[in-house]
Image (tube, rainbow, N blue to C red):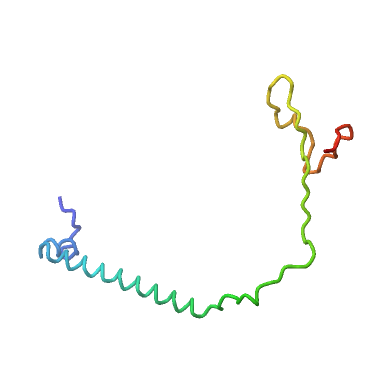
Length: 111
């Protein structure tokens, strides 16, 4: 059975005829090509980095505003009551609560 399909000049046939020395030459050339590609990529990346703008100096940084720009609310968002029988609530049993803050309980004394 002929598996070469008539290709008597393929690389595998040439390397098999020349012996293990030819394999070393091919591997060496491939390794050299990889090294050249890596060095070229590094050089190209350095050229692109040199074209970028430098980072801003400390005096060019944005200044903090004098007034507060955010409002933080801390409050209870959901009920903290658990079922008395110890079972978990299903999603449809949770109710229609969103992210609105529950008003404080008027019966509970404030600390």
